[in-house]
Image 1 (cartoon, rainbow, N blue to C red):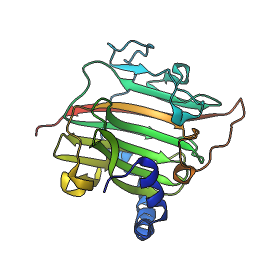
Image 2: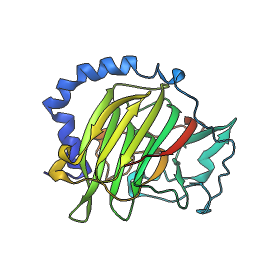
Image 3: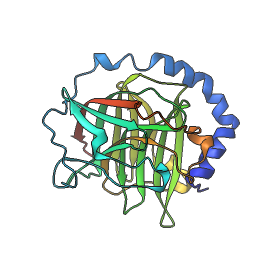
Length: 264
């Protein structure tokens, strides 16, 4: 069975299956975030130069609008590198996104980030690592969803539409300020492996997805902090966003990033 984002997430919110895994996920949540310090240090962002519209660069800040944002558009000014760390900020009426630049897509790679989450609140989405192929309608996500927890999602092209074909809540609860090492290993058409703090938490193959649909095209990484404030967003997913004071800021920090090739 295929689902739109709204239908799928509404179903998950009400499902007894989600409630069944909640106890284990809460236990995992308490233990997670402690192992990142024992892992090798990822390269920092000190050599990265962020320039708007320079898609020939390795990384590019975004600046445009999307309906899902509800006026909290991507703003290049909300992205900066401080002491070698990439900071993405949500402020009143602005979100933050960085995408990889030219020649960065791959069908066989592992992407990793070290992240410290912002203060989470209903309607805020922290997506410190996700990979995407817009033309192919394919996507793989880490998303910290409001104060509900961490959702893992695999999207694929189904009848020429962008459909969620596999989803799992990996950690539950308010994860404000937590530090994680996150990894996505992608072997196009074969396997997606999600890892947290060096431990594989999900391995997804076509046998696990709705109808066997599975991404197989080259993907490139993105790093986002955004507001699910648009009318198209179901508040049952992330919660209802409330406007911020003009002086308030929510900051997500990416301390390091690495892309490694993977043999298939």
